[in-house]
Image 1: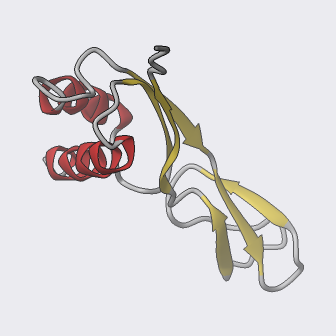
Image 2: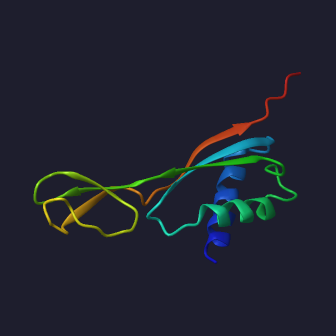
Image 3: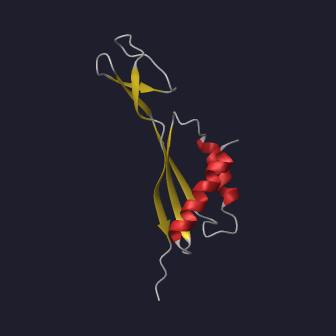
Length: 113
């Protein structure tokens, strides 16, 4: 399960950016064509964040659909797997979206003194 290693890297990046502040929420974008299982990331997140500034943080995952542009006719084609066929019959597609793995947002606790 490569999602464990990916989640460990996400947690490390968030910890670095939080600079010791308590993290309340993390928003990830994961492309549907990325071969990364959102459910597995969610499961691993709960384990990887124990005893860190992310403990108890909410993980929100936004799944980005696969979208490609046809080289033949220029049409945009929605994909649910890394390959597909255009309405014009062409299989020459350039991916536009769907392979993302991005930390979109980190919400940290503000301490008022």
